[in-house]
Length: 143
Image 1 (cartoon, one colour):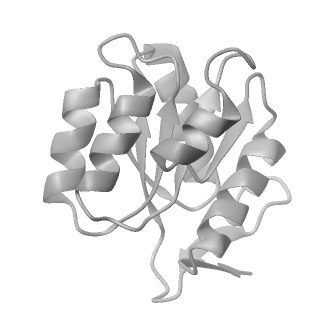
Image 2 (image 1 turned 180 degrees about the horizontal axis):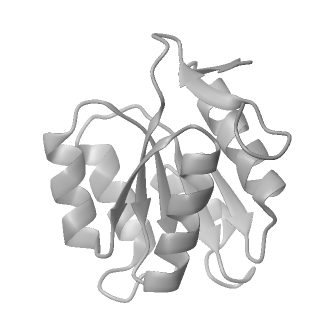
């Protein structure tokens, strides 16, 4: 069991979900890494759009992408669109600093599965990850 009341996440194959974390802020990246580990995931943190695209091109086992919608090196919606052009079907969860970071219509059109507004609690992130993975048929919970 993961720390707290959260069951560890597992893929249907029984392995920890591999989660790409795309956030240019060092503190946010460290927090997301710790939370993903607590949820039983294997976090793959990157701090730039280019690094995220390179990671996704070379890692066929990524199950979920968390992307900060306030990236400084590239428009996050463009990053999502570029990820989608790679032909990968995993869910992409956007992390928005406030409602004005990105419109829901624009994010849906780009291929975001959902958007989670900051600040969020660990439980809200966990629930959003479970929902995103579940919609994609990727994850199952284990005790």
